[in-house]
Length: 558
Image: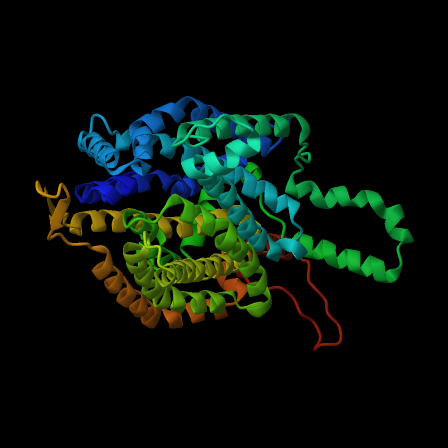
C-alpha cells in the first residue's frame, strides 16, 4: 500500500520504506521459535495426540485472529482510497494526497498496530510449524528423508502461488470486471476488485478453521510410543520372522539397525532442561558455530533484491497485473522444476550447489535487477513494440534468475541440514538450524528497509500553474548506489568465506554430533567394569597372547 502511494507522490517514498522497515519485524517469530520449540515437543495430551495437541488450537486461534482483525488491517492501510489510483488523473492526485495525509499522521496510520497484528499471526504459525515439522519427521522413513527438502520447496511455492497470486487476481479491478464476474455471472461493478484485502484475510480465516476442524475430527495421529520401549515392542513377531527367507530376514535386520541408529531422543522423556542442555551443547560445536556465521551473514548482500526490488518496481509503475502474471507463468514452474533438477545435478554436494547459486546471486542478479527497474521506469506505459519487448525481457530475466538461484540455495540448505543433523536430537537440531537460517533473512530485511528510507531524499515538487502539471526537481534514490555497494559486499563474502564453506562441506558426520550419549555409555561401562573388578572377575581371551584383563590406574578404568 505504501509503495503504491509512493508511485504517485514522491514525498511519501521515505515514509513508505520506514514503515516497511517496521513492518518487517512481524516475521521475527520464525527466527525465535527455537525458544519455545522444546515446550511444543514435550507438553501434549496423549489422548488427543502429540502434534494435534498444538496444531488444532493454534490453527483455530490463527483463524479467529484473521476473521476478527481483517477489517482493522484494511482500514489502517487505507486500501479503499488506493484503489482509486486507477481512476482519471484528477482523482489520482486527490486519492494520493489523501493517502499521504493519512500516512503522515501516526494516529491514523497505525503501522505498529498492523505490525503487531501480523506478528501475532506469525507467532501462531511459527508454533504450528514446530508441531508440523515434528509430525513430518515421523511420516518420512530414513530412505525418503532426502526428499523432504524437495517436498518443502514445492509446497512453499504452491502456497505462495495460491495466496499471493490468488489474492492479486481476485483483487485486481480490471481482471475482476473482465474475467471473474462474467465467469461467475456476477453483477458488473467497474473499478472495484472482486475481493478486498480484508475480505481475503477473513475468508482465509474461515477456511483455516474449517480445515482445522477436519483435522481434529478425522485425521488420526499414531499413538505415542516411548522411544525406550520401541525395541521391546518389536519382539512380538518372532513367529512371522521365522517364516522369512534368509535374504528378507537380513534386509529387515539391516533396516531395523538403521532405524535404531536414527532413533531420536524424546523431549517428553528426557525433560525440558535436558533438551535445552543438548541444544546448548550443539551450539558449542565449532562446525555449528561456523555454519551459524554463514547463515547469519550470506543474505545481507542479497537483501535489496530479496526485499526492495519489487517495492521499487511498483513505485516506478509496475502494475499488479504484471506481478500476478509472473508467478503462475514463471515463479511457480521454476520453483517446482529447479529443486528436482538440482537433486540430479549436484547429488551429494549441497554446499557446492549453494555456492554456485550464490555467485550468480550477488553478481548477475543485481545487474539484471537494475536493468529491470530502469526498463520499468522507462517503458512500463509505452505502447511501442520494441519498448514493450525490452520491458518484458528485463522483467522475465531478472525475476527468472532470482527465482532459480533462490530455489537452488534454499534446496541446498535444507538438504545439507537433513544429512548433517545428529539423529539423537534430530527435530530440535533441525529447528535450531532453521531458526538460524530464518534469522539470517529477517534482520537484513529490516536493516535495508531502514537504510533505503534514511538515505532516500525526496525531490522538491511544485505545481506549474500554467500547465497544471506537477514538476519535481532534485532528490536522491538510494536503491542504485546501495545495490552496487551490496554487490561488492557479496563478492567479498565469497572471497572470505568460500574456503570455510568448503571445509564445512568436507567435515565428517562426527563433527556435527555432541556425543553426550557416548559419554553416558562410557561412564556406565566404566561402572560395570569396576564392579566386575571388585568381584574378582577377569576377561579371558585365547589365541592373542594369553591373558587380557581390566586393570585400574589412578582410579580410572583402562
